[in-house]
Structure formats: C-alpha cells, structure tokens
Length: 363
Ligand SMILES: *Cc1c(COP(=O)(O)O)cnc(C)c1O
Image 1 (cartoon, rainbow, N blue to C red):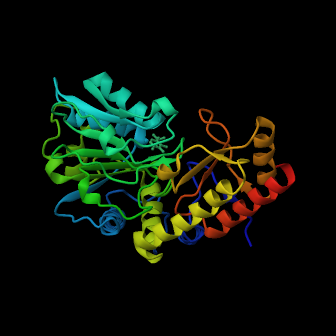
Image 2: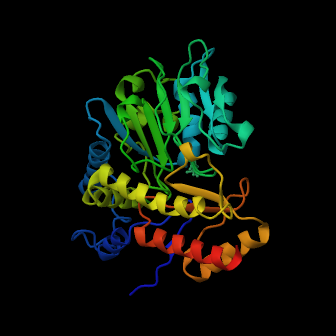
C-alpha cells in the first residue's frame, strides 16, 4: 500500500486516489501515443476529445444544456475572474452589486472597483463573516449590471443555503470551493467560476460556466486573453491551455459521475459534515464553531478551541496521526477542516474520533 495521509488542506486539496492511479497508469503512454498527455499538442484530436468530453460532463453533472450554457477552461485562478467579470460585464457608468461574505468576496469587489462603480448590496463583515445575508438583508442598487456572490466562504466556513432572487439581473457566483458538491438550480446563474484546486482537480485550470445570452453582452473592447468571447469562440483553445490540469479535471468529472452524480455526492458531503458538527455541538463548548448553524458550510468546517496552546497541540497531534492541513486561516484562527468531494468518509470519521479523544484528554 502507498502511504497516503488524510489531507484537510483548503486548496490545493486532496484528489480521489483512483484518479491519481488512473493518471499514473497512462502517464508515460497516453492511449498508445507513446507520449504523456503533457507532451501532446493542445490542437491534437486526443486533446480536443479531452476538452469536449470535460465540457459535456460538466454540463451534464450540473444539469445544464449546451444550448444555453458554454463551459470554458481558463487559467489565472479564481483571482483572474475577479477582474474578468467586471472587464467584460461592467460598462462605463454602470454599477455592479457585490455581496460581501468573506475575504474572497471582498477581493472580487475590490477588483471591480478598479474598473467601475460597486455597490455593496449586503455584507456580514460586522459579525466577522459568521453568517450569510438573508434575502431581506440584500439591498440592490437601482439597476445593477450584475450581482456577484461567493457561494461558499472557504476561510470562514459559511455557505449559501439559498439562491437569492435577483429578478432579471444576471447573478454571478464564485463557486471555487463548492462547485459540484451539491444539487443546485444552476440555471438561476448567468456565470459561475471556480479555480479547480479545491473541488475539481489540480491548480492551473479555472472553470467558467457562462450563459450564452450573457456572453452576447460581453465587452468587445478588451484584450482577447481577457475576453470571454474570445475564449468561447476558440472553444477554450485561444492559447495553450493548462493541458495536464484539464486532463485530470476530466478524470475527476468521470469520478463524480461514477459516484452517482451530485445527488449522491451531496448526501455523502452532508453526512461527512454532520459527523464533525455533531462533535462540535456535543463538546460542551470546548469546540466553538465559527459559522452560525443555519449557514454552516459542508465543505470547510471552522472552529476554535479554548486557547491557542490547545489549538496548536490539536493540529500537531492530528498531523502525527495522519490528519494533516487542519490549521485555520490566519484571519479566523483555530482549526479548519476542508472536506471537499474527494475527502473520503473514513478520513472524516478519523477526524471526528480524534476530536472526541482530544476532548477527553484536554477538555
Ligand atoms: C481559493 C479561492 C479563491 C482564490 O483562488 P485562486 O485560484 O487562488 O485565484 C477565490 N475564491 C474562493 C471562494 C476560493 O476558495
């Protein structure tokens, strides 16, 4: 058996073992070509097949039609999308509405501010991002070009449990840390983007899913490399893509499909999250969750211990037992367990048992 730890890092994050094994198996000779997938032309038939099937699988898993939506495989991470969204969809004089639920949401809005007017439609900064705004908390500007939200807040451990009603205004979401983790009415979104390194595959590829009716409205007066239109017209091959990352992404999509699609994945994710939240809730206050209960994330579980010493000991002792990457982000402190799709139930069970055992010893 290969040595594998349970990796709770927030991203890059753990990948399904079977995906890694499959990539390993065909690494030196990709399907009889005598070359690895990294060495073939991105214009080859073989690579085109990878892009096409990844695109089709993505739409199938999300329940979207290729008539209405196009999938793009870009680079630059979610952070480039923070800039590309306003570059393409915030015309001069217009206002974009942002809902601020954490650091990444804030960064996205700051990039838009460089390019145009931003209205903060809601923010939960005042409670240190423990919650998600309710529909009533959201105050839109007069006629926003679009509304932007972050579906899962990787650092704070909160997750939207509903899709806000935005009327006719295009809703755009950063889904970097929860895409493909649950069933959602995806057709309520006009544009969704996600850096792959949390829930989809390795770093280096960013997935964009865009409604074709929105694509038609994209700005034409921007450099091609930053233009959704240019990437869409070239079918994600405007320039050399991050080909190996796209290849692994395709394997991950196959894996999600084999697991039973989003319904099955969501059920398992909820079971996993409940295991940890139950320990927190039954710890007599020893473990304190950061997020309010209603808005807890099924992807990133954030919590504190009574003091810094025990937090440090927790992360160190867990690591010795093969549970790694549990230290929280510096802006929240404490512990964060990132339990994306690829984290197996056994890993979460091991963590929950460790938490109980640690509480018995140090509580
Ligand atoms: C990780 C993360 C980002 C940043 O992604 P990069 O690919 O590093 O640019 C943005 N938004 C969310 C929600 C994230 O979790």
